Amino acid sequence: MSTSAPSRPAQRDLSAAPLLVAARGGQPPRVPVWFMRQAGRSLPEYRALREGVPMLKSCFDPEMLAEITLQPVRRHGVDAAILYSDIVVPLFAAGVDIDIVPGTGPVVAAPIRTADAVAALPVLEPRQVTAVAEGVGLLVERLGTTPLIGFAGAPFTLASYLIEGGPSRTYEHTKALMRSDPRLWHTLAGRLADVALTFLRAQLDAGADAVQLFDSWAGALSLREYREFVLPHSAKVLGGLADYDVPRIHFGVGTGELLTAMREAGADVVGVDWRIPLDEAVRRLTADGSPAPAVQGNLDPALLGASWPVIEAEVRRVVAEGRAAAGHIFNLGHGVLPGTDPEVLTRVVELVHELEP
Ligand code: CP3
Image (cartoon, rainbow, N blue to C red):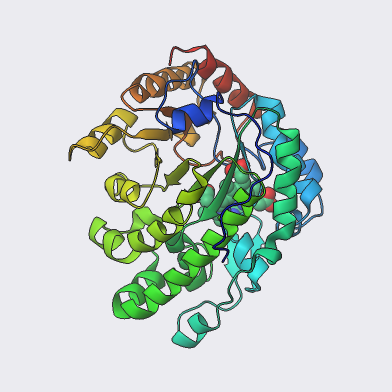
């Protein structure tokens, strides 16, 4: 892990970029909008480019990852690009035997459930993600005034894939290990925090303008479990980026009960899924007297398949409720579903941009 002072490429002047203004709690002239998973299978141009190329190969091809990242920016006119990569990319780069199986997700050859397996987990060296950093370098040259969001998976979500061996609905092995052997859990989560931090610092050193820490599956935990077993490790990741002075977005699904703790971990922007509205999220985040936060999210991705009047009403509702926040970034409550009609996404961007912030 690099501990030297950040050395970043010559900065683009993005001081007026709506996404960065909103992320810092300001009022841009329009509501910034981007979509989690905006790059990917909803786009025919993505499917054409990826034809015959395994996901993890495409993530280490600087030209390809840059092009895939740019596709939704060109097509939809969104206010941010998000790096095309995956949360398991730094684990793969470090040498973990892991693959992304189409239609399933990350699959680990030998699930990590013992002290020996945790001890054998490799450390990520920045040189192992040079190809990703090169892709980021191409992107900041090509993006003009559009910010680039880098990202990583948070320790809990990464651990859940490593311990379960793949996607899970119950997280039974993860919770059993966490509760039966807290020391081993903390060792594993601490090492995954280092992996995430090294990966994020590599993206920021190469020029990324903001970061999102995805703790997608943290909503499986109680608030008490989250505080004891997860918060310190996510705080290590987010706190380890403080010297870059870039906005840090922190997101998970089903985290309505965890929002305050997720903010405490070091978030500048709190991600919200579709289960509670943004004004209710702000109410929860300010109940203890804390200042209003910046928030992101809330449109249910499944509703993008509904009729346009339904979508339009939902977009207007989210924008109206977002006014309760200090800074609102329009987004979905989780990623774009592969079957989403991309024309609908473009229309949502146009509508958000027409509405009064
Ligand atoms: O546009 C973007 O948001 C950037 C791309 C992105 C991908 N993965 C590309 C991808 C991002 C931000 C991720 C993060 C990621 N990966 C998360 C956190 C976000 C979330 O959805 O909660 C998680 C949990 C993963 C793990 C993962 N990788 C899953 C669950 C899947 C889907 C499996 C499937 O095929 O249904 C993947 C694969 C993946 N990651 C794809 C893409 C474009 C699809 C693979 C393909 O096109 O072949």
